[in-house]
Image 1 (cartoon, one colour):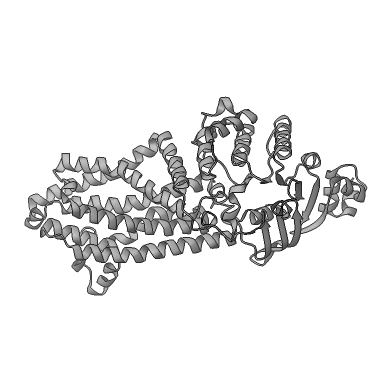
Image 2 (cartoon, chains in turn purple, orange; image 1 turned 45 degrees about the horizontal axis):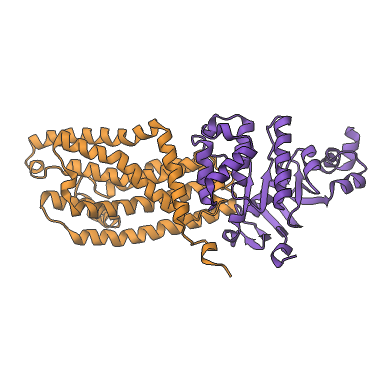
Length: 253
Length: 273
């Protein structure tokens, strides 16, 4: 193992983010090894998006530290931004630009070589070839998600941060997107941190699940061990146990 | 060790070109945006042109000072449209909810600002060049006859417009689109003090130091000196340049501080109101 690949993809230590005296993230620590797919689960307001924003360097922690591919975020972010990418429902691609124009702009920003070929390759893989010259704003929700995914893969990132990547997609498109992500990670040995409400998606993709509640990590294990420990059949039941408190969840059933 | 290409202050012409391409694609795709660039400068110039035409027929001073009103209108438009061109390109990113994508990309703030500066010149050229031609055709006022003086006026006005545009962009980043109106209105704060249409001596004495603290004041005084007294005041242009250096430093420093505050507050993820 090389020295570089021994460094975890993400190292979070005692991370805190406080907004006006309210802790959104409250002293969490975890480490994600290279080449793994990890799910970040939690209800609304659990702190998932805040955590991902700090990992991306878009948000300054109140205290604690985040290292991405060995670089301290956000101060050393320019050392690694070229090697990572993200997809989030909180951002859009410029709507008036065509898919090809958007991918060209982002490809240039990331310094992608042989950009025309890369765009063609991604368009082929994500079934966007016939749509390449259509304005992004005129696409369906599923097509837009595929364009966002193409943007997030334009630089062949080693680390991919995905916030609700299949939200608002029909089951068929969502399944298709998951299959593509699986293939990408396997082929490139890429690391993925995936925040999602879709338990089926997390169960299928992730080899490890971090469950957050009120800014803290409630549990952190493989899906199989979580099911065993909570005595549940699905991750959704585990999630409800954590989100509502175990007794309340059992009473609700 | 952080190498030059990994530094926050690295500069890549390729990334600047990428951003310019992005704005060019946008302009090309939207004819209302192109029309809007020409519409207001043209309306304003024609209105003021007729006013000048009227007063020239009635007042001896204005007859001698031919072109000062139209000249003031055109130079004011360079200042105002320069800042607006910068700010609107920036606002396009906010409206498109694209700021997060850009801030997560290797694009450096200085490269982003450089692209916005170049685009403000492009937008200005699209809007103001046809209007200067209209001024010549309608009222016989040839802005380009100002020659080297025009270059000095232009450089100083653009520097001020960029300094203000950079600072306003920082405010919008920090405060969201609720601060958008500043982009449209902030330059009008300069208008009475910069003495666009009248000499500085018109202002009360206690207000004149405030006027001389603004770089555009020197440009408009310089224009009047050129058109009325036929004298190019290089001293005024150099003073404006020195003040612009201070304005630019304040603008960039303010932008970086506001960007830092936006990173603390999480405004980069929430670009709405």
